[in-house]
Amino acid sequence: MKEFFARAWRWTRRYVTLPLVIAVAYIVFVLFFNENSYFKSVEYQREIDRLEAEIKINNDTMMHYHQLNASLSSDPVELERIVREQYHMQRPNEDVYVVE
Image (cartoon, rainbow, N blue to C red; front, side, top):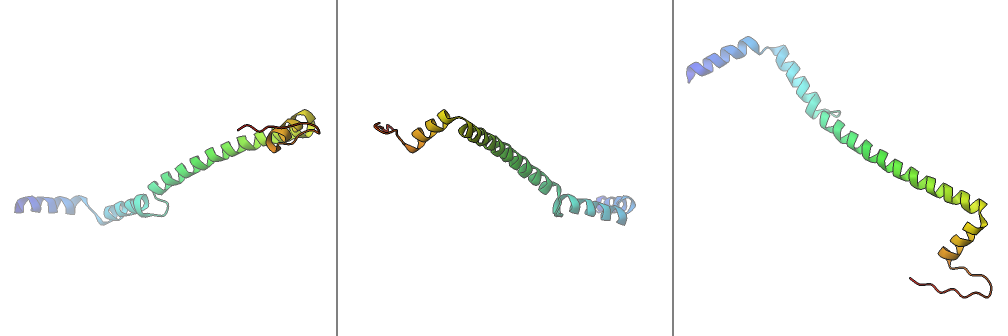
């Protein structure tokens, strides 16, 4: 057992130098413990992807409402339909029954 430790100690002294230990420690620090570590970068990229998908959904919704607004501004029949359906408005001498 002593011989095993002696051989390991000789190998370590021969191949493991101070600059190597410093370089490995620096790489480990940058990869795992730094503010800009690999794991945080992956987490930030997932958050960016989620927010980009949310922006796309919101842009699609915004385009829908822009088109609806344009059609309400230019088409009186569409405006009357929306007002009668959503606000239960009626013409004079007309009865409205709301069925839900």
